Image (cartoon, rainbow, N blue to C red; front, side):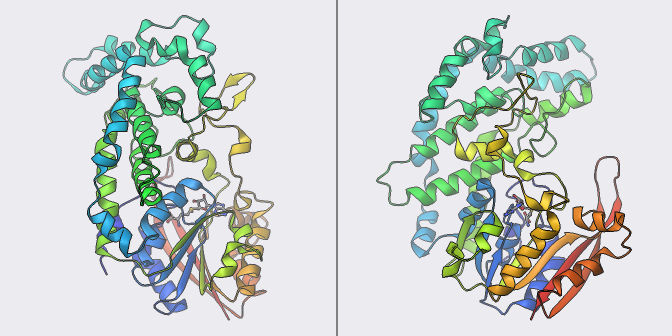
Length: 463
Ligand SMILES: C[S@@+](CC[C@H](N)C(=O)[O-])C[C@H]1O[C@@H](n2cnc3c(N)ncnc32)[C@H](O)[C@@H]1O
């Protein structure tokens, strides 16, 4: 079994289990599941766990977010014919022409902004880290960013520097057309919504152009669907590692402080095409080096719906469900809204507050999935419902959670329970005959609390 290849991070993601697969999860899964059995990774996120176990088990994977299911599908679903196709894939032939055409049209919408950004980012970095300080250069970049047009068209009436023309003047008209017909060329959702916010303008135009080209793969290509999934997964990786934010899209990073501005400039110099190609190579290599068992499937559903009777899961025999839900009140749909919207590419209405666009440029709340695991009121019932359904389906259950920082375990502790892990076990014993607790101490490096130790919890339920 090749282990080096599965170490590639598909996404920068909160709570990814990449580090824990080998040292913690592997033993637990092998204790619960015989080789060749079927594992359902119920909240698969980056697909790190599904990928780790794919060489030895049949994998079903699920997540409520579409971007996660795209990543999982690219890594898990396919047959012998697809493996051969992967070996002879020609991305330039599939995408090159449509990328170039979209890019040409976008170049015409923001010619001066692209030219300025191409030259100024490295100068901004030198201006802070080099021997000669030049604060006027930093101010120039800040002004350039602050004068960029807003996607609600509001800035089109205000003074906008000529640097952002003609896009600024045409923004309302271009967006209105695309809200009615998202396939209209040039594709410009990322450029209009998130340039100068989560990406540089060069990056945003490349993201739009690659995304557009993926949609243009001809209908009569026999591998169209799988190619689109593969290319989209590679683009999601490129987008994820290029965010100007820390590692997600919950809030754009402020560029008020010089050190933050340099960090943002460094991120904005990341070449989207290079990251895209690296991700593509990594997925192909992993696929070719560790073949998958037949019959892998990926779903995109609220896990509660998927486990209910009458769902597509009725066609499958599931031996073990691995549940790794969110640990905190932070909904993934907020932290990764850019990835989700890029998959949909439907120019959604953006959320406003007090009539103004939010800084985070999120799609409206109705487009964002809200998880019961992120609600301190609903989390206990959410676990109970999964345990009940898994037991009814005859599957064992393995749960990952945090002993110390989980929403539910913290709630129990605040209510006076000294041993939340044991309370968790007792709750699961209402559904399963045997429940074993395993714990591992991890060093957590978070903001302001670096190198705090937290206990990662596993609950193994069977019988
Ligand atoms: C801790 S992350 C999983 C990380 C994953 N094991 C990995 O290694 O990348 C939690 C995941 O649960 C998903 N999620 C949250 N609520 C869900 C629900 N009700 N049904 C399905 N997925 C859900 C989130 O979208 C997120 O991807």
